[in-house]
Amino acid sequence: MAIESPPISALDLEHQYGAQNYHPLPVVLHRGSGCRVWDTDGKEYLDFLSAYSAVNQGHAHPRLIKVLHEQSSRLTLTSRAFHNDKLGKYCEFMCQTFGFDRLLPMNTGVEAAETSVKLARRWAYEVKGVAPDCALLVFPEGNFWGRSIGAISASSDPESYGGFGPLVPGFVKVPYNDLAALESAFQNPNVAAFMLEPIQGEAGVVVPDQGYLASVRALCTKYRVLMIADEIQTGLGRTGALLACDHEHTKPDILVLAKALGGGMLPVSAVLCADEIMLTVRPGQHGSTFGGNPLACAVASEAVQIILDENLPQNAASMGCLLREGLQDLVNTFPILQITRGKGLLQALVFDKDQPDLAWNFCVKLMELGLLAKPTHGHIVRLAPPLVINGDEIYMALERLNQALRTL
Image (cartoon, rainbow, N blue to C red; front, side, top):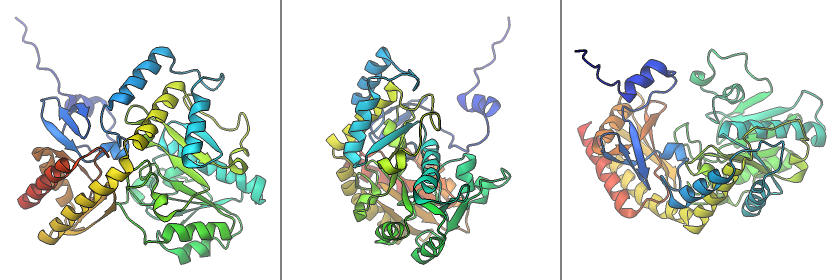
């Protein structure tokens, strides 16, 4: 009798057949609800990454499940060759909610960020009067908006751009949180735009000085440079306000949204701006087969409405204060921690940079204790649970963080 081979695990299958472009924790997730997820063995975890802030509304939100089911049963995709009955309503809702004239729909965050670069260049040539092919875009060091050739060309991280050249020309980099360097770059009249994250997420939750965003806005206005706010990770309630720019009552010229815009259901992104910028692009000059599909429009509209209806920015602010107080206590208790930083429910613990395995070992121990987080840049652990988290879950997480630190 032939002996059957044991089934290959999900981890082994992925290792054997998948690309090796990620280094995930060794956990295989199967189900999620709210702030919690379960692995294939039924073990429960608190999710403190939220798919890099794509699941602000919590896993499997019933309103999103309902909209997803109803719309997918009716119509999912037409392409932009035809109109659909959801796109116009979605554009109107988003423009009125965020205070812009027009919306251009895309799918992923990197697509939306690339779209903002194209719009800025086009505006520079048609409106500002920059000579053809001379437009410059300025980016802060430490930025991260994806892995496309355009995104890595803006990066200051050799791990992102090394070995992928030649890179896109016309990108200028200045230190983050440095207004003098920014104004110096703006002396060049060919500068079209400055694109920044209000808080740098992938860089390790780097928070600029109070007043930086408002000062950036003032400089952009003074030198006729477009301010592009990459709110892909910081937007939609994550930092305790609907947009992170709202903390300084600052409105960008171009707003880029993604991640939580899809409610953890599907990739949805959007670029919002004024007529003067958006209408420089005409039919045939930019697009996406899936951009603006009726399923995405229905889900994104409900995803944003949930954030508003359930006061998730306010919950992020109050729960973020609880979390931050607990994290500061941990920093004061454990010498292996250097600092904690963040805003709302986007927080980070910074370990000793000279001990590169410490943050990874910490996250492995957290996984064993039932909390999922992930290091960035080797020594920083980002903590970003779904915005529906409650006080009991915050205290539960802090206890598990404390236990993990005691083992180190």
